[in-house]
Image 1: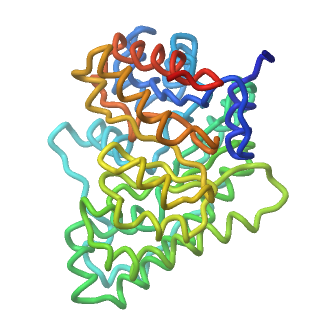
Image 2: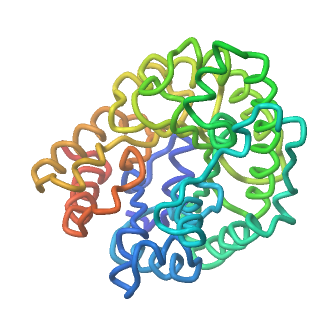
Amino acid sequence: MAEYTGKQRVVAAFRREHTDQVPLAIAAGLNCVGEVGYTQEDYLLDDEIAMKATAHALEMFPSDIVRVPGDPTLPMVAQARFRKKHGPDAKMKPPLRDKSAIEFFSYQDPRKSKSYTPYLEICRRCVREFPDKAVHALMPGPWSNAVGLRGLEEFLFDTVEDPEFVHKLMKITTQLTKERGAALVETGILMLVAGDPSASCSVISPTIYREFIKPYHREVVEYFKGIKDQDFYFGLHICGYTDPLMEDLVEVGPDFIEIDGPSSLERMVEASRGKVVIRGNLPVELFIGGTREDFDKAVKECIETAAAGSGYILSHGCALPPDATLERLRFYAEAALKFGKLPLSH
């Protein structure tokens, strides 16, 4: 059987083709940072350390995808930087706590932003240094950008009390998402995902999604599908429980959808009808307390549910817990290789 690179396996999944095994994602840089002599806070605050830990994780575990480390707009990174500057008990205040401040809100071109250009450079480094991997970058989606600016609780109240404001802010953050994403695509990454963690039914109702988020997800997807001069795939990531939204997400039309452990993979396969690639959705709790047998069972179920017609990438449902153990990461990798070989093992 031919030898395939991780990138070739992932591209084959998007083409609905099989290679030698089901594509596998293990984003374990944060969990492996201690192996290169640093702390998890070091990983969040120092791009060089993050790259060392990411490279080491790829040596330890056979991931076909390399998740670009960092991103100053992600809450975990932003909070770590804020605490380092202002003290461990400091709390960030949303910039639009006062709604009237929206009239003065502006943002920089990401290609010129001092906070964003380092992330663009680390994307380029990943493309250069891991040419055989599918390089995957994450950016906040329009809903997450809006929540970060306004605050989740306040923004949810706004959907009832001031829907006009919600749409006004979502239009701004949708444009921000498109501009950041366009800059990321220029770095040569293969996969770009817009993450809207709090857009699931673990937090909001389907009605809120359909009225205040879906139109902007559609706009973002259409924008990236209109970029014809770059070879990349665009996806959506929503944490938590998304079963009531699956048809909506497929209808929006991304190349791939990443689903979390609380969602039904079987339901997503039925809803997608082969229209989108599915990535997910091993429960992340396994990486804290799971046994080898637990991983074998969960991985086998994921592959049997979703991999038969290709168009599937095996992955943990969301980000790995910071305290995920290396032993359990090995259980996951070994189960993936055992049950993901093609033709599929049963």
